[in-house]
Image 1 (spheres, rainbow, N blue to C red):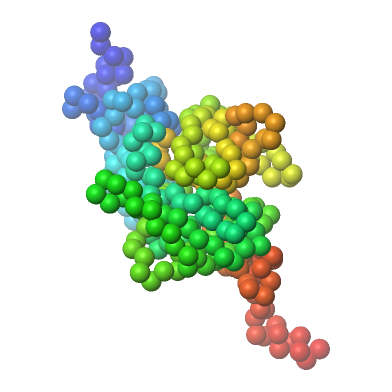
Image 2 (spheres, one colour; image 1 turned 30 degrees about the vertical axis):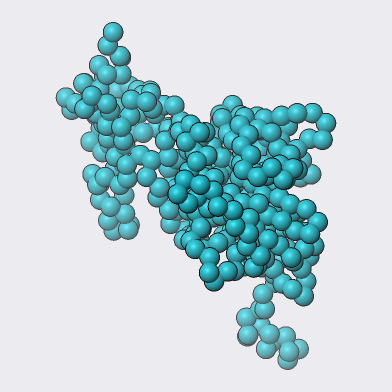
Amino acid sequence: MTKPWLLLSALVGWGLAPALADTIELKDKASIAGKILAEKPDQVAVDVGYTVLVIPRSQVVRILRTDTSTAANGFPESGTPLVAAGERVAASNTGFYSAPNKPAPARTVLDLVSQLGEAVVQVRTPSGLGSGFFINEDGFLITNFHVIEGETQISVEVYHQKAGQLDRKTYKQVQIVALNKFADLALLRIDDKDASRFKCVSLGSADALSVGEKVFAIGSPLGLERTVTEGILSTKTREMAGALYLQTTAQINPGNSGGPLFNLSGEVIGVTNMKAAAGEGLGFAIPVESVRFFLDHRDAFAYANDNPGNPYRYLEPPSRTRHAAANN
């Protein structure tokens, strides 16, 4: 039986698609040209000019995107292929972390865990432990503020893969870079000159997810490192104490705090930080949009030894302002 979208793809090949269009290359050497309206882990919606096709993701080989901006605006001219589907394109506003403009294709949790496991770490202090994850190769990592609250003696356990085996290494030279206790976020850095480059993860978008989509967490609940739990996104707007959290059925327990919540593209969409004390399958995570705001404005949250509890760093006013104040 011929698939309806394959019949329509043949019509597109006869020139019925819009002049400025993305190209979706399919299996069996077929292709469709049109404007991509939406992408989901399991399907792609494409406007081909006279109708909208919904293409199963399993039939897509790759997507070539065409930008409609002009070169005068700093973008490629119309008709220039930009990026194939699944390629990671760093956001233009930062080089500190990776944030693809488009989600990568969905994969299985089994495949993603083996790929992402090295980037997830265990954070230890004299009073307890939590989880964290690297956001770049230079050893910068995210965890929860409450994991390291009041502590300066911090160690990070990293699990390097060598010859197919996991090699646990503990780093004790850990610097606190920035804190935001109101958002329950902390930015740390492994300050070890002998450390190699670290595996890191990309930050995705919680806004792009739909309720009911599958997610999974990696962390160290009760000290059981590299524990993986899977579930769905229950809601994106659970209001608690004046803030909005992601709610998930993925099991979250003490020790998961500060660890990543992933989508099936392998991108971080939240930072797990609490669970309901009574009940099961009621875990919560800080949306990744809050994490990106924290990282983009990390200078304002810089840690200061003389005032470690203050999440904000107030910079000196411009010299002209200081001079005018001194004369008054």
